[in-house]
Image 1 (tube, rainbow, N blue to C red):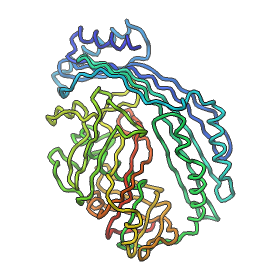
Image 2 (image 1 turned 180 degrees about the vertical axis):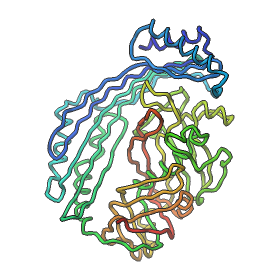
Image 3 (image 1 turned 135 degrees about the vertical axis):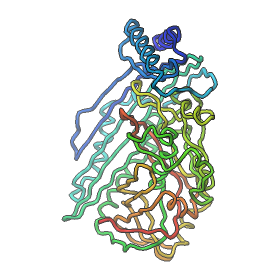
Image 4 (image 1 turned 60 degrees about the horizontal axis):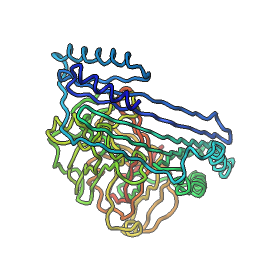
Length: 469
């Protein structure tokens, strides 16, 4: 398939393409599910093929192949070039930013190879986790483990050639507690790149036991009256906020309007760089190179070397996320944000690991300066409008703070405010840093890619907190 990818690029070039690229990709995945003690049928999938992009007469087109058939490839490439040329008078012209030619091999090494771990061991892991928390107050217990290995070979007509291999693990669980007619729900994902050694690092047995106990206790938690107060947010909620209210609106294709009818728009405009959005303690970055991150990459799906992107710097809008096409429109270099979910999807502007940078405070120091407030450790619900401006978060595990001390559990505190209201309320950031995993959806056809999101504990001053009914 590597040879066929090289053939496709060379054939397109000989037949009039100004630019061509091919990305061979092989994805091997296995998914195991346990629901209330019952093992569902494992899902074992292998998927491979070649995705191509071609520019002919300034028109960018995409096609993909699953069959290793040179005659079919020749026919389809010629057809795509003809279509591009015939539509050049009515289509928008595409140009790519000039980038360095790269020849590189990279991979994430596994101390314990996932494929060497027996299927029975993987299923037993989930069964043990479910069995350890089995009780009548937890009537619904769902666990799912997915192991994926993605191998890629990227080549373009400029001379870039990149091989990569990335193993990923994700564990998702959903727990429901119930006493009488009262219910609470907790869902969470852990994900990382690397081998089976990740499982030990997650300390799953303790984490899930602790959360199951909390979820039952939460049924008897108090409700809080609507009022303005200080709020401490843990990394989990900070992460989803950074992803939704900073990462997505900073995607340049969204800013330029491409995603308007698909994933939404953005409150940001091309000339908003330098605009103040938050306090000076707020710096938000997106970095694909965080070791062990879920969504790690060293080169993006256009062959551009990854780097840390400073989306907000000291409260100011600093940088957008770009692929080569949007970068050219802005007159800059790409910052390596082009990603595709599989070979049969085009690379579009995506996040990787989006997080707020830590500050200087311990969690105790953040809490001790709060006279009356709420500490929201995890969330059960979030939503945001399609311009990423109005947002709402509903807490799951949350505690009342009185005179600098953590008190009892609070049920479903709601934080509802604008993006600028959020970032402008942050007065202090903790010195800790943690991440949560997710699958980010975008595009049409839909593309789900692995991401991390996170930050430190942060403190918001004088914001309205409500109670969810």
